[in-house]
Amino acid sequence: MNELRKFAVIGNPIKHSLSPRLHALLAQQTGLAVEYTRQCVAPDNFRDYVTQFFATGGCGLNITLPFKGEAYALAASHVSDRARAAGSANTLWQENGQIHGCNTDGLGLVNDMLRQQITLAQSRILVVGAGGATRGVVPALLQAGCAQLHIVNRTEDKAHALAAQATAFSPSHARVSASGFSSLQGTWDIVINATASSLSGETLPLPGRLFRADSVAYDMLYTPSGDTPFLQQARNASVRHTSDGLGMLVYQGAESFRIWNQIQPDPAPVLAALRTELSESV
Ligand code: ATR
Image (cartoon, rainbow, N blue to C red; front, side):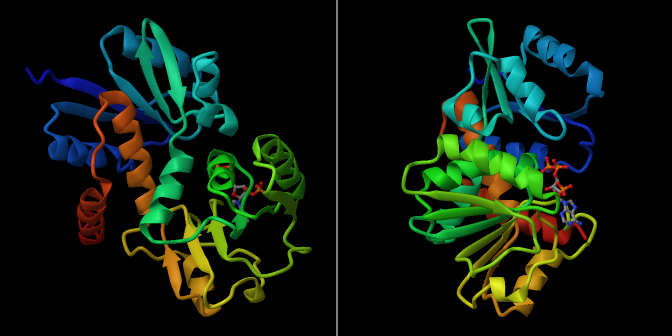
């Protein structure tokens, strides 16, 4: 019997989330009966909402801004190594009456980069931004075997604090460093935008010499056109390989789906379908 399984993504705001459509496509591919809704939750109602959701038979939750830290705290002693390294959770489920948490954002980014044949092992990676988005992906980038990871942020102290935290989880061969924009130096194999700058259409104060033509520029945000101000900036500096974050969204969702349903979906055709739908939505 294919019993209906209930899921939701919760955040605030949430109305533009593509996750319900993504999970409908994953369910269609695997033949599961899934109801996946989006829920806007008031900041002081997060814990009650989650508790009630699982008490009434909900199977799994995705968590987005601004609740990933609270989700981690709620899952407390039942968090995966990935969630612990990131200090945040984007995936919750219940086992034996206990809420469990994982963070699939980092794996989502790394798997999307592998799909694009981006070499992470021994690479020099620059991550721009030092907020929750960066915290979620840095451990996975280090695990993937990069040689150096540098965090640059407008508020320099936040970059240093994150780099110090990351060092605790860093494999011994990886060098983790941090700075503000003004002292940023060198060229990088991979430059990842994990700031909110593309949302507001702002251009980051990145020197063009950061990029080489064979650098990869990856924006964790996605847009209907697949283009963002950061990716334009990279192309203006002759970068050939640019990517928005739609693949990351799909691969993190596929990993949540696998955790909840013990079924491994094939994300590639789902990404292709979502890309087509998104580009036709404008
Ligand atoms: P999130 O959890 O999505 O990462 P956040 O914690 O508010 O959100 O962090 C947003 C990140 O984008 C921060 O690194 C922020 O820089 P500050 O720490 O200096 O605030 C960065 N950011 C947002 N808009 C930016 C802009 N226009 N230029 C540079 N950095 C920007």
